[in-house]
Length: 523
Ligand code: KIV
Ligand code: ZN
Image (cartoon, rainbow, N blue to C red; front, side, top):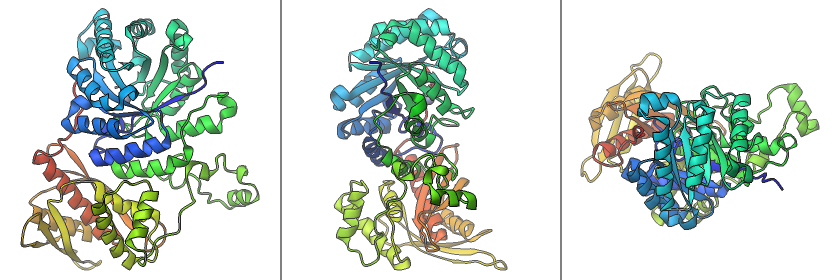
């Protein structure tokens, strides 16, 4: 029987993380990888090991800890990249994969690489062979594959498969493809390369969303012989992002009638949880109307729709929201809940916490519990997020006070303490609003000056007493965007915490901590 199983290759931690300002630290990546394992993706592309010590360490840690999915590391067709990827995925043993890539399109060959076709094939084959000395499972990507001349693309596929590649991934690197044409290209490759036809090697696709067609192109590809799709949670990634995992998976599931038996092993009930975790860890807010995982995805506002839903859900709902993990919240905690109850709920939510973490979260939980009646799972998750960003806390917030009003000059007094210092530092600032004044006071104390590039505030849970979660991106000079996150029932405090988180991240990076990561230029 024909193989109808689609391999879900998740690249949230690699391509997703390449999105400006989305970079995550080791602990954040591990939390995401644990959730991807619960989601039951088949492959986790954990990073690009040669790019920085931080990337190497996180791929290695994920390869060491995560059981179940295959763990892939990305490499250019360059010996040092491939060896770094081999070493990083080694702890995953037989589940380790090296993903090597080299551009093949004419425009990349002529203008970026300055190499002729035969030289490209030689480098690709060498790269695959070197990767084979580390692992059995080698994937090759002809970068800009969708814009590569089909006859040359077939030659490349044949050569890398003969050299030992077990998967050949056709990237639509710049999101140029359209579904009918891309489907036809995949069909042509499937028919022309014997190993694809026989199933000895797998065709994969990796579609970017520049024209909003990443999911449509990926689905056209699977209808034409691709058996692996590369995607990210919430569709995050370079520029307009990658194909969204949740949209792909739910289309295959919901429209099984059309996709005739094509299926994957993803546990769809973990989708919403994964989406929220990735949003929090990456600082990339999900738009309300985003399919499957946006706040409004299952919200019916028109009376006619609500009436229909009450009579028969399927009149206006093509998916059961519970199938993707909406609803079903546990009983909320209250200020009377003890440490053990909080620890048990954290465990239930899937967080791996040390006693020290639980203690710190419990202290914040008590503060929040005093201010609001119920502490929901989402509130608790927001507190965890603050705890695991693991940014060295050079400065901590001790106190702030703001005066504001439509006829007053907003003024903030802020007291911060520097790590290890006996004395706290207090200063004041004025601004065009209470947040602006607070952030200016923080700048005066920390002697930094961040320019806010992006700011988003969302209610973590429901009700007027809901916690507000602020995600912001600030530029501290040199164009390096730093993300900061903070949560509180008071939105000025949430903003102050988010900004301080960004300041601390910036200070740790400039003091030789985690270096800002950039994709290296092509070899
Ligand atoms: O978009 C792209 O071409 C990539 C490759 C590295 C697969 O991300
Ligand atoms: Zn990509």
